[in-house]
Length: 419
Ligand code: GDP
Image (tube, rainbow, N blue to C red; front, side, top):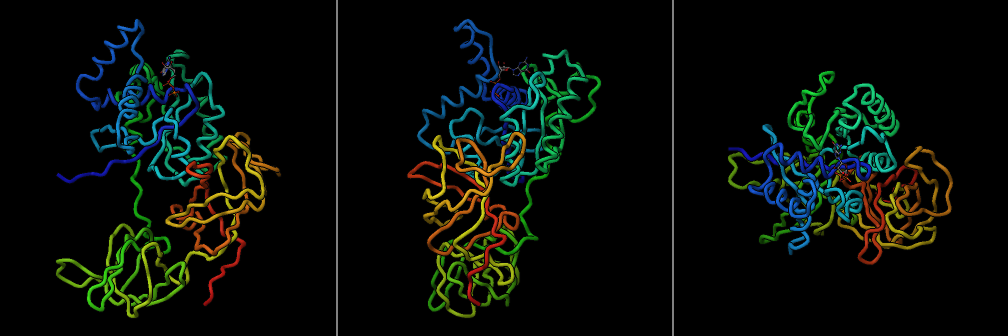
Protein backbone atom coordinates (compact mmCIF):
# COMPACT_ATOMS: atom_id res chain seq x y z
CA UNK A 1 0.00 0.00 0.00
CA UNK A 2 1.12 3.56 -0.69
CA UNK A 3 2.41 5.37 2.35
CA UNK A 4 0.58 8.64 2.96
CA UNK A 5 2.74 11.10 4.81
CA UNK A 6 1.01 12.34 7.95
CA UNK A 7 -0.59 15.74 8.07
CA UNK A 8 1.15 17.86 10.70
CA UNK A 9 -1.05 19.80 13.07
CA UNK A 10 -0.49 22.00 16.09
CA UNK A 11 -3.03 22.41 18.88
CA UNK A 12 -3.08 25.91 20.37
CA UNK A 13 -5.28 27.95 22.68
CA UNK A 14 -5.51 29.55 26.09
CA UNK A 15 -4.40 27.60 29.13
CA UNK A 16 -7.10 25.30 30.56
CA UNK A 17 -9.35 25.63 27.52
CA UNK A 18 -8.91 21.88 26.98
CA UNK A 19 -6.04 21.22 24.56
CA UNK A 20 -4.60 18.26 26.47
CA UNK A 21 -8.03 16.79 27.10
CA UNK A 22 -8.85 17.09 23.43
CA UNK A 23 -5.66 15.32 22.38
CA UNK A 24 -6.09 12.49 24.91
CA UNK A 25 -9.70 11.93 23.97
CA UNK A 26 -8.95 12.18 20.24
CA UNK A 27 -6.26 9.51 20.52
CA UNK A 28 -8.69 7.26 22.35
CA UNK A 29 -11.65 7.87 20.07
CA UNK A 30 -9.64 7.22 16.90
CA UNK A 31 -8.23 3.99 18.35
CA UNK A 32 -4.72 5.41 18.37
CA UNK A 33 -3.79 4.73 22.00
CA UNK A 34 -1.28 1.95 22.62
CA UNK A 35 -2.90 -1.27 23.97
CA UNK A 36 -3.42 -1.19 27.69
CA UNK A 37 -2.66 2.53 28.03
CA UNK A 38 -6.18 3.50 29.08
CA UNK A 39 -6.38 0.65 31.63
CA UNK A 40 -3.02 1.70 33.00
CA UNK A 41 -4.12 5.32 33.40
CA UNK A 42 -7.48 4.35 34.90
CA UNK A 43 -5.74 2.14 37.47
CA UNK A 44 -3.32 4.93 38.27
CA UNK A 45 -6.16 7.43 38.79
CA UNK A 46 -7.96 4.93 41.07
CA UNK A 47 -4.83 4.40 43.15
CA UNK A 48 -4.62 8.16 43.63
CA UNK A 49 -8.31 8.37 44.38
CA UNK A 50 -9.07 10.76 41.58
CA UNK A 51 -11.19 10.56 38.43
CA UNK A 52 -9.52 9.80 35.12
CA UNK A 53 -8.54 12.94 33.23
CA UNK A 54 -7.94 12.61 29.50
CA UNK A 55 -4.96 14.90 29.82
CA UNK A 56 -3.20 12.04 31.69
CA UNK A 57 -2.58 10.56 28.26
CA UNK A 58 -0.39 13.52 27.37
CA UNK A 59 1.23 13.52 30.81
CA UNK A 60 2.12 9.86 30.31
CA UNK A 61 3.67 10.61 26.93
CA UNK A 62 5.50 13.54 28.47
CA UNK A 63 6.91 11.30 31.20
CA UNK A 64 8.08 8.80 28.60
CA UNK A 65 9.63 11.65 26.69
CA UNK A 66 11.48 12.99 29.70
CA UNK A 67 13.08 9.58 30.13
CA UNK A 68 13.87 9.15 26.49
CA UNK A 69 17.36 9.84 25.28
CA UNK A 70 16.31 10.98 21.84
CA UNK A 71 15.20 14.55 21.44
CA UNK A 72 12.81 14.30 18.55
CA UNK A 73 9.91 12.70 20.39
CA UNK A 74 7.57 15.65 20.66
CA UNK A 75 5.26 13.96 18.18
CA UNK A 76 1.98 12.27 18.84
CA UNK A 77 0.35 10.20 16.14
CA UNK A 78 -3.26 9.36 15.41
CA UNK A 79 -5.19 8.13 12.42
CA UNK A 80 -8.53 8.85 10.87
CA UNK A 81 -10.10 6.57 8.27
CA UNK A 82 -8.66 8.91 5.67
CA UNK A 83 -5.08 9.52 6.73
CA UNK A 84 -2.46 9.64 9.47
CA UNK A 85 -1.86 12.75 11.55
CA UNK A 86 0.95 13.89 13.74
CA UNK A 87 0.44 16.46 16.45
CA UNK A 88 3.62 18.45 16.83
CA UNK A 89 4.54 20.60 19.81
CA UNK A 90 2.00 19.41 22.30
CA UNK A 91 0.63 22.07 24.64
CA UNK A 92 2.26 22.42 27.99
CA UNK A 93 5.50 21.40 26.43
CA UNK A 94 8.06 23.84 27.79
CA UNK A 95 9.42 24.73 24.38
CA UNK A 96 5.99 25.11 22.80
CA UNK A 97 6.14 28.75 21.76
CA UNK A 98 9.83 28.48 20.93
CA UNK A 99 9.16 25.59 18.60
CA UNK A 100 6.22 27.44 17.14
CA UNK A 101 8.20 30.56 16.30
CA UNK A 102 11.39 28.79 15.29
CA UNK A 103 9.33 27.29 12.51
CA UNK A 104 11.24 24.05 13.07
CA UNK A 105 7.84 22.59 13.52
CA UNK A 106 6.13 23.90 10.43
CA UNK A 107 2.63 22.53 10.49
CA UNK A 108 0.08 22.02 7.74
CA UNK A 109 -2.77 23.15 9.95
CA UNK A 110 -3.72 24.25 13.45
CA UNK A 111 -6.52 23.46 15.85
CA UNK A 112 -7.45 26.46 18.01
CA UNK A 113 -9.27 25.47 21.20
CA UNK A 114 -11.61 28.03 22.83
CA UNK A 115 -13.56 27.38 26.02
CA UNK A 116 -17.23 28.25 25.37
CA UNK A 117 -17.69 29.54 28.91
CA UNK A 118 -14.66 31.83 28.72
CA UNK A 119 -14.63 32.86 25.09
CA UNK A 120 -11.59 34.24 23.28
CA UNK A 121 -8.83 34.98 25.79
CA UNK A 122 -5.34 36.43 25.81
CA UNK A 123 -3.49 33.32 24.62
CA UNK A 124 -6.20 32.45 22.09
CA UNK A 125 -5.41 35.76 20.41
CA UNK A 126 -1.66 35.55 20.78
CA UNK A 127 -1.48 32.01 19.40
CA UNK A 128 -3.74 32.82 16.45
CA UNK A 129 -1.65 35.91 15.70
CA UNK A 130 1.54 33.83 15.73
CA UNK A 131 0.06 31.15 13.49
CA UNK A 132 -0.78 33.78 10.93
CA UNK A 133 2.55 35.58 11.28
CA UNK A 134 4.38 32.32 10.64
CA UNK A 135 2.40 31.68 7.48
CA UNK A 136 -0.10 29.10 8.68
CA UNK A 137 -3.41 29.53 6.88
CA UNK A 138 -5.44 26.42 7.70
CA UNK A 139 -7.14 26.63 11.07
CA UNK A 140 -9.93 24.55 12.55
CA UNK A 141 -11.50 26.15 15.62
CA UNK A 142 -13.09 23.99 18.30
CA UNK A 143 -15.35 25.63 20.83
CA UNK A 144 -14.96 23.32 23.82
CA UNK A 145 -16.84 22.41 27.00
CA UNK A 146 -20.31 22.76 25.47
CA UNK A 147 -21.50 20.56 28.37
CA UNK A 148 -20.79 23.48 30.73
CA UNK A 149 -23.45 25.61 29.01
CA UNK A 150 -26.04 22.91 28.56
CA UNK A 151 -24.95 22.41 24.94
CA UNK A 152 -26.74 25.64 24.17
CA UNK A 153 -26.62 26.80 20.56
CA UNK A 154 -26.92 30.52 21.40
CA UNK A 155 -23.82 30.39 23.60
CA UNK A 156 -21.93 28.54 20.88
CA UNK A 157 -22.95 31.04 18.19
CA UNK A 158 -21.81 33.96 20.33
CA UNK A 159 -18.32 32.49 20.82
CA UNK A 160 -18.20 31.42 17.18
CA UNK A 161 -18.83 35.04 16.14
CA UNK A 162 -16.21 36.32 18.58
CA UNK A 163 -13.53 33.95 17.24
CA UNK A 164 -14.45 34.63 13.65
CA UNK A 165 -14.19 38.39 14.19
CA UNK A 166 -10.70 38.20 15.71
CA UNK A 167 -9.42 35.79 13.05
CA UNK A 168 -10.83 38.00 10.30
CA UNK A 169 -8.92 40.96 11.71
CA UNK A 170 -5.62 39.14 11.40
CA UNK A 171 -6.56 37.72 8.01
CA UNK A 172 -7.43 34.13 8.88
CA UNK A 173 -10.58 32.38 7.80
CA UNK A 174 -11.22 29.22 9.80
CA UNK A 175 -12.03 26.10 7.75
CA UNK A 176 -14.60 25.11 10.35
CA UNK A 177 -15.79 26.07 13.82
CA UNK A 178 -16.91 22.95 15.67
CA UNK A 179 -18.84 22.81 18.96
CA UNK A 180 -17.37 20.02 21.08
CA UNK A 181 -17.23 18.57 24.55
CA UNK A 182 -13.72 17.16 24.52
CA UNK A 183 -14.05 15.40 27.87
CA UNK A 184 -17.11 13.49 26.69
CA UNK A 185 -15.85 12.88 23.17
CA UNK A 186 -18.65 14.85 21.55
CA UNK A 187 -18.04 15.91 17.94
CA UNK A 188 -14.39 14.83 18.00
CA UNK A 189 -14.35 11.51 16.14
CA UNK A 190 -18.00 10.69 16.76
CA UNK A 191 -20.94 12.96 15.99
CA UNK A 192 -22.71 14.13 19.13
CA UNK A 193 -26.39 13.28 19.34
CA UNK A 194 -26.66 15.86 22.11
CA UNK A 195 -26.28 18.88 19.78
CA UNK A 196 -28.94 18.28 17.12
CA UNK A 197 -28.83 21.95 16.09
CA UNK A 198 -25.30 21.48 14.70
CA UNK A 199 -24.99 20.04 11.20
CA UNK A 200 -21.37 20.94 10.40
CA UNK A 201 -18.39 18.58 10.44
CA UNK A 202 -16.94 16.83 13.49
CA UNK A 203 -13.35 17.76 14.33
CA UNK A 204 -12.01 14.71 12.51
CA UNK A 205 -14.18 15.41 9.46
CA UNK A 206 -12.97 19.01 9.46
CA UNK A 207 -9.34 17.85 9.63
CA UNK A 208 -9.91 15.28 6.90
CA UNK A 209 -11.25 18.03 4.64
CA UNK A 210 -8.00 20.02 4.86
CA UNK A 211 -5.47 19.79 2.07
CA UNK A 212 -1.85 18.94 2.79
CA UNK A 213 0.52 21.73 1.82
CA UNK A 214 1.48 21.38 -1.82
CA UNK A 215 5.07 22.08 -2.90
CA UNK A 216 5.18 25.77 -3.91
CA UNK A 217 5.54 25.39 -7.67
CA UNK A 218 4.44 28.91 -8.52
CA UNK A 219 6.96 30.72 -6.34
CA UNK A 220 10.43 31.94 -7.38
CA UNK A 221 13.06 29.20 -7.61
CA UNK A 222 14.88 28.41 -4.36
CA UNK A 223 17.34 25.56 -4.55
CA UNK A 224 19.72 25.27 -1.59
CA UNK A 225 22.82 23.29 -2.53
CA UNK A 226 23.31 20.35 -0.20
CA UNK A 227 26.38 18.79 -1.76
CA UNK A 228 28.81 19.16 -4.62
CA UNK A 229 30.21 15.92 -6.06
CA UNK A 230 33.28 15.81 -8.26
CA UNK A 231 33.55 13.16 -10.94
CA UNK A 232 36.69 13.61 -13.05
CA UNK A 233 36.23 17.10 -14.41
CA UNK A 234 32.51 17.20 -13.82
CA UNK A 235 30.89 18.77 -10.83
CA UNK A 236 27.41 17.69 -9.88
CA UNK A 237 25.47 19.98 -7.59
CA UNK A 238 22.79 18.31 -5.51
CA UNK A 239 19.90 19.84 -3.63
CA UNK A 240 16.16 19.82 -3.02
CA UNK A 241 14.08 22.29 -5.00
CA UNK A 242 12.20 24.07 -2.23
CA UNK A 243 10.17 26.40 -4.41
CA UNK A 244 9.60 27.04 -8.10
CA UNK A 245 11.43 25.11 -10.80
CA UNK A 246 14.14 25.34 -13.48
CA UNK A 247 15.04 23.94 -16.87
CA UNK A 248 18.17 22.92 -18.72
CA UNK A 249 19.55 26.10 -20.29
CA UNK A 250 18.34 28.44 -17.50
CA UNK A 251 20.84 30.88 -16.10
CA UNK A 252 21.06 30.48 -12.34
CA UNK A 253 22.54 32.89 -9.85
CA UNK A 254 24.07 31.51 -6.64
CA UNK A 255 23.66 33.40 -3.40
CA UNK A 256 25.51 34.76 -1.58
CA UNK A 257 28.49 34.59 -4.00
CA UNK A 258 26.40 36.11 -6.79
CA UNK A 259 28.11 33.89 -9.40
CA UNK A 260 26.15 32.86 -12.45
CA UNK A 261 26.13 29.88 -14.79
CA UNK A 262 23.75 28.00 -17.03
CA UNK A 263 22.29 24.59 -16.30
CA UNK A 264 23.94 22.13 -18.67
CA UNK A 265 22.20 18.95 -17.59
CA UNK A 266 19.92 17.53 -14.94
CA UNK A 267 21.24 14.18 -13.80
CA UNK A 268 19.01 11.16 -13.76
CA UNK A 269 19.49 7.74 -12.29
CA UNK A 270 18.14 4.82 -14.30
CA UNK A 271 15.71 7.06 -16.18
CA UNK A 272 14.76 6.20 -19.75
CA UNK A 273 15.03 9.76 -21.09
CA UNK A 274 17.14 12.78 -20.15
CA UNK A 275 15.54 15.07 -17.66
CA UNK A 276 14.99 18.61 -18.89
CA UNK A 277 13.28 20.29 -15.95
CA UNK A 278 12.92 20.00 -12.19
CA UNK A 279 10.37 21.45 -9.80
CA UNK A 280 9.54 22.03 -6.16
CA UNK A 281 9.65 18.91 -4.04
CA UNK A 282 12.26 17.11 -6.16
CA UNK A 283 15.81 16.29 -5.11
CA UNK A 284 18.04 16.85 -8.13
CA UNK A 285 21.62 16.68 -9.26
CA UNK A 286 22.65 19.04 -12.03
CA UNK A 287 25.72 20.31 -13.87
CA UNK A 288 26.62 23.81 -15.07
CA UNK A 289 28.17 25.02 -18.31
CA UNK A 290 30.98 26.74 -16.39
CA UNK A 291 32.98 25.54 -13.41
CA UNK A 292 31.98 28.26 -11.01
CA UNK A 293 32.72 27.82 -7.35
CA UNK A 294 29.50 26.79 -5.66
CA UNK A 295 29.33 25.13 -2.30
CA UNK A 296 27.03 23.59 0.25
CA UNK A 297 24.77 26.29 1.69
CA UNK A 298 24.57 28.35 -1.50
CA UNK A 299 21.10 28.96 -2.85
CA UNK A 300 20.38 28.88 -6.58
CA UNK A 301 17.66 31.08 -8.03
CA UNK A 302 16.80 33.01 -11.19
CA UNK A 303 18.28 36.48 -11.56
CA UNK A 304 14.95 38.29 -11.87
CA UNK A 305 13.55 36.76 -8.69
CA UNK A 306 16.70 36.19 -6.65
CA UNK A 307 16.82 36.79 -2.89
CA UNK A 308 17.85 40.30 -1.96
CA UNK A 309 21.40 40.97 -0.85
CA UNK A 310 21.24 43.40 2.03
CA UNK A 311 22.51 44.02 5.54
CA UNK A 312 19.48 45.87 6.80
CA UNK A 313 15.89 44.73 6.80
CA UNK A 314 12.58 45.14 8.52
CA UNK A 315 11.15 42.30 10.58
CA UNK A 316 8.11 41.45 12.62
CA UNK A 317 9.39 39.56 15.61
CA UNK A 318 8.00 37.77 18.61
CA UNK A 319 10.16 38.24 21.70
CA UNK A 320 10.32 35.18 23.97
CA UNK A 321 12.89 36.10 26.60
CA UNK A 322 11.99 37.46 30.03
CA UNK A 323 14.20 40.51 29.69
CA UNK A 324 13.33 43.43 27.44
CA UNK A 325 14.80 43.76 23.96
CA UNK A 326 16.17 47.27 23.33
CA UNK A 327 17.75 49.12 20.41
CA UNK A 328 21.49 48.45 20.24
CA UNK A 329 21.16 44.86 21.53
CA UNK A 330 23.21 42.38 19.54
CA UNK A 331 22.12 38.79 19.02
CA UNK A 332 22.74 35.92 16.64
CA UNK A 333 20.44 35.74 13.63
CA UNK A 334 19.70 32.34 12.12
CA UNK A 335 18.00 32.31 8.77
CA UNK A 336 18.08 29.15 6.68
CA UNK A 337 21.65 27.86 6.80
CA UNK A 338 23.06 31.33 7.55
CA UNK A 339 24.12 32.79 10.86
CA UNK A 340 25.18 36.35 11.49
CA UNK A 341 25.50 38.81 14.34
CA UNK A 342 22.60 41.19 14.19
CA UNK A 343 21.90 44.46 15.96
CA UNK A 344 18.48 45.84 16.75
CA UNK A 345 18.64 49.18 15.02
CA UNK A 346 15.17 50.49 15.74
CA UNK A 347 11.76 49.54 17.03
CA UNK A 348 9.19 50.93 14.63
CA UNK A 349 6.08 49.71 16.40
CA UNK A 350 4.91 47.36 19.05
CA UNK A 351 1.85 45.34 18.04
CA UNK A 352 -0.64 44.53 20.76
CA UNK A 353 -1.80 41.02 19.84
CA UNK A 354 -5.00 41.57 21.83
CA UNK A 355 -6.22 44.69 20.03
CA UNK A 356 -3.89 44.56 17.01
CA UNK A 357 -3.08 48.22 17.71
CA UNK A 358 0.34 49.49 16.67
CA UNK A 359 2.19 52.00 18.83
CA UNK A 360 5.74 53.33 19.17
CA UNK A 361 7.78 51.54 21.84
CA UNK A 362 11.20 51.87 23.45
CA UNK A 363 11.57 48.16 24.19
CA UNK A 364 10.00 44.79 23.43
CA UNK A 365 8.86 42.90 26.52
CA UNK A 366 8.35 39.20 27.19
CA UNK A 367 5.92 37.61 24.69
CA UNK A 368 5.43 40.87 22.81
CA UNK A 369 5.37 41.41 19.08
CA UNK A 370 7.12 44.31 17.37
CA UNK A 371 8.03 45.65 13.97
CA UNK A 372 11.75 46.36 14.02
CA UNK A 373 14.74 47.17 11.86
CA UNK A 374 17.68 44.76 12.08
CA UNK A 375 21.20 45.30 10.78
CA UNK A 376 23.98 42.79 10.21
CA UNK A 377 27.61 43.53 9.50
CA UNK A 378 27.96 41.29 6.46
CA UNK A 379 25.59 41.17 3.55
CA UNK A 380 23.03 38.36 3.61
CA UNK A 381 20.80 37.08 0.86
CA UNK A 382 17.34 37.34 2.30
CA UNK A 383 13.83 36.53 1.22
CA UNK A 384 10.73 38.47 2.01
CA UNK A 385 8.35 36.16 3.89
CA UNK A 386 5.57 36.98 1.47
CA UNK A 387 7.65 35.71 -1.45
CA UNK A 388 9.07 32.72 0.36
CA UNK A 389 7.42 31.92 3.72
CA UNK A 390 9.97 29.27 4.67
CA UNK A 391 13.02 31.31 3.68
CA UNK A 392 11.62 34.53 5.10
CA UNK A 393 11.51 33.18 8.66
CA UNK A 394 14.29 33.61 11.21
CA UNK A 395 15.11 33.08 14.85
CA UNK A 396 17.32 35.12 17.16
CA UNK A 397 19.60 33.25 19.50
CA UNK A 398 21.38 34.38 22.63
CA UNK A 399 24.01 31.81 23.51
CA UNK A 400 22.08 28.54 23.24
CA UNK A 401 18.74 30.13 23.94
CA UNK A 402 16.17 30.95 21.26
CA UNK A 403 14.97 34.41 22.28
CA UNK A 404 12.86 35.47 19.29
CA UNK A 405 11.33 34.35 16.07
CA UNK A 406 9.95 36.31 13.22
CA UNK A 407 9.54 37.09 9.58
CA UNK A 408 11.51 39.29 7.20
CA UNK A 409 10.26 42.17 5.05
CA UNK A 410 12.82 43.30 2.51
CA UNK A 411 10.56 46.00 1.05
CA UNK A 412 12.09 49.43 0.94
CA UNK A 413 15.70 48.28 1.19
CA UNK A 414 17.87 48.33 -1.92
CA UNK A 415 19.34 45.17 -3.36
CA UNK A 416 23.11 45.42 -2.94
CA UNK A 417 23.98 42.85 -5.57
CA UNK A 418 26.13 44.01 -8.43
CA UNK A 419 24.98 43.06 -11.87
P1 GDP B 1 -5.16 22.78 28.50
O1 GDP B 1 -4.44 23.61 29.49
O2 GDP B 1 -5.69 23.61 27.38
O3 GDP B 1 -4.37 21.61 28.00
O4 GDP B 1 -6.47 22.24 29.23
P2 GDP B 1 -6.78 20.79 29.83
O5 GDP B 1 -7.00 19.81 28.76
O6 GDP B 1 -5.76 20.46 30.85
O7 GDP B 1 -8.19 21.06 30.51
C1 GDP B 1 -8.35 22.00 31.54
C2 GDP B 1 -9.55 21.63 32.40
O8 GDP B 1 -10.73 21.67 31.61
C3 GDP B 1 -9.44 20.23 32.96
O9 GDP B 1 -9.93 20.26 34.28
C4 GDP B 1 -10.37 19.41 32.07
O10 GDP B 1 -10.95 18.32 32.71
C5 GDP B 1 -11.43 20.43 31.72
N1 GDP B 1 -12.09 20.12 30.45
C6 GDP B 1 -11.50 19.85 29.26
N2 GDP B 1 -12.45 19.57 28.33
C7 GDP B 1 -13.64 19.67 28.94
C8 GDP B 1 -15.00 19.51 28.51
O11 GDP B 1 -15.30 19.18 27.37
N3 GDP B 1 -15.97 19.73 29.44
C9 GDP B 1 -15.67 20.08 30.72
N4 GDP B 1 -16.68 20.29 31.54
N5 GDP B 1 -14.42 20.22 31.16
C10 GDP B 1 -13.41 20.03 30.29
